[in-house]
Amino acid sequence: MASEKKEPALPKVCAAGVLLLTRESSPHFLLMRHPDRWDLPKGHCDDGEDFLTAAKRELVEETGISGDDCEFDPDFQFDLHYPVTYRKQSGTYRKQPGTYRKQPDKTFQKHVRYFLAFLPQVVKIELTEHEMSRWWPWSPPHQIQSQTIDPLLAAVADHLSANQSG
Image (cartoon, rainbow, N blue to C red):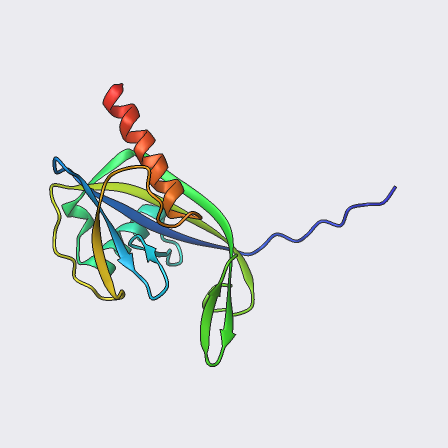
């Protein structure tokens, strides 16, 4: 009987983000533009930082919006787990599907936790780390990025529907 060789566990890295949704009669949600994709305000957790603290810190760093100006939904959080690797090419790091920036060519198991927060209306975003931002109309189902954003938006849509009918 052959024994199976168990692969060592990947080192872990955590990140946290916020889906901002307006409470307007026609709600909108915020996405930030990276050179190659749209994403939510999010970033890596600092040492010893819990997910919610990291999410609020990243929100203000990337948008200028304080977590104190938002209403966080205490009943919603969404977790994703996936491998992530960065490769060094021509003096820069290029993200590969499935290394973490400070250690190129090493694969990590990434754990991202997203929170849902509300603003009364669309607000102007102070861009600090992104090319641009955009308030997208809330009209599920969305097809923006299948690995991370679409599952989150589907979970938020389900959560909001359940709370409206319950």
